[in-house]
Image (cartoon, rainbow, N blue to C red):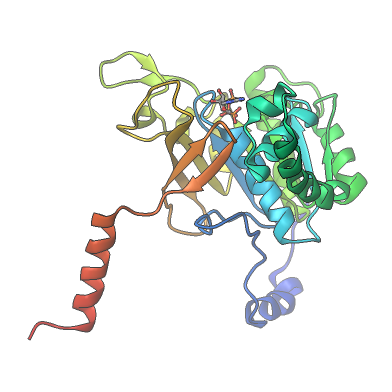
Length: 304
Ligand SMILES: Nc1ncnc2c1ncn2[C@@H]1O[C@H](COP(=O)(O)OP(=O)(O)OP(=O)(O)O)[C@@H](O)[C@H]1O
């Protein structure tokens, strides 16, 4: 076994230089209103939430936006549930505004085909920097695929189904080992986005449910190593009181930040338009805005 350790004087100079060089740490631009989500080299972020809330779509949106904003960014995606073509159809829908149903059913009229071109162009721009693992879904395969393009951002969807190296006694041991390897990816300078299944919790009436109010850090399935190993952890849950009509194409969801290793956890409200698979950050409502402007005004106009 290799044992790693370092004397402080061996890295003091480079660290001092790093602190003083005046440039902020690299952070990906994943879209308007989402700057509190710190995704950058060397970080591990965990995204959990009930099935179908949009974790896959949100994290793919973040990755594609980051690639569009930074032409040097290379990304590796390992999705155990959906093939690349289906994942990209969601992005095509979002980027062109054409309903996903029409794309999936291949019922596109001339006008829609023209609009799709914009989406295809954007995807073509990132196509030589985006690699998908097709299987086996092991961390070794992820490492090979990521190395093939020197990927810096790795998206694992989802962590309980991606097998680590070696044999492990049970699911828990296997997820622990996966998190260990993910930390090694991060130490090598990668940004890892890991999606996680969550367990049901008890709702206010004692029933087993995925109700957002009962979910927390301990809800990440199989292992506490997940909550400790991640730098940041998020839960994507339906917003409290949001209209739960399953036919609505737009649903209100909350991205709760449960853990932020180096900052203050911040929640944010999002609208998820499922018909085009697009997430938008909700503007604070007028009352909230008024409260803020009043408090600001008071700051500048002290009581007379
Ligand atoms: N063509 C479509 N039109 C409208 N909504 C759709 C369409 N295809 C998928 N959806 C919805 O979009 C959402 C996609 O969610 P997504 O797969 O990103 O969720 P997830 O949180 O990753 O789920 P899971 O944990 O089950 O993988 C789901 O609610 C799904 O029902």
